[in-house]
Length: 123
Length: 123
Length: 123
Length: 123
Image (cartoon, rainbow over all chains, first blue to last red; front, side, top):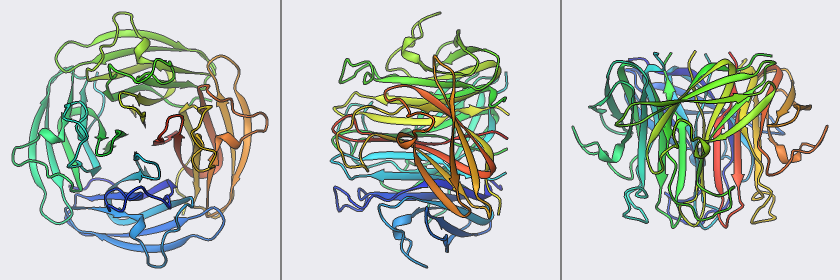
């Protein structure tokens, strides 16, 4: 079954530079959750947009057929790492339909805060 | 009245393995809230997708006509329980239109964090 | 300008019975935020759905032309109050297009948690 | 590439008057994240709606081509500042397609809470 869209956007991005914990599960992070329900691998290109300089990318990832990828923006480093404490936005283009959701865990303070939202799907 | 869609997806799933409380209301949990406004029962099939193995399912639930079901993924156990501390995604297919929303309560830390988002509806 | 839809649904509803504070701003609450950008008043009917009994409603509210209404479900009492510590869902029907968003402030624990999501709009 | 819509609405707005911190990153705030992936600058007009008085606006901002703007409602002051501790809603109109997301950081309590949701896009 083909589920999803091929163009997604997340207008809100921000990775806090601080965390209360070194536990990888609790380090402040920003995640793009990608779901590929289809029978073909999804080749995905991510472009990052900033307030005051040219976009950076593409970052390339593959979501295998019938798999999900929970991608931490913290881990992207080619062509360059994602800056901390800096607002950004992202455009995600796939060659097959996928579904995308955006989550942040913020652990700057003694307790964690979570946000999540479905990304914008171009129709 | 017929309200909703028949195919929904949640790209983001994760049940923390720890909780600060044994109170069922405050145990870390992940919920799919299903609303069936219609006059016919909704027969729902849920398939779970993972990063590195084949999808699991279908899990089958019924949302009676004119009822809501707040389904905890924690409680799913047939064909197998949902693993803790593991990212997953879900595809939900119904034989009549329903509305779906996704919520997580994370109580790993001394205080709780909440997230919620409307699921992706295939149109 | 006419902005919005006439049929909205929130699959997830839950008003915690406890709060850490008596300050009205910090009592656990669930809010439907309604925006009417148009030139005519919006007559809105809300129906609540439950897990194990017939729907309740309609609750009737008016969103005046060019106004927003941040409606606390806690305050609804006609035809009957919304039960605490009970999952529910809601269907919102308006005679003119409106925009709707759903927010919960959970203050059961020493610190508050927030969630918000756009409601489902029937197209 | 043209990504997004030209009319967006956020039904839920509220800037808490208190914060636990003077650190700008942790002061309670409400943000509209705007993404312009296109080749032309976006001229954006924001109108604020209230419960009991006429709408205020337009507030005018520009999102340059291929840039993102993370706009704090706290910083808007022309034609007038956004009141604290007051519910409001916003309508955002752009002359080119943009993508919009809404985030709040609430730091009234000793710990922060976050919410985020995609705004409503008129289609």
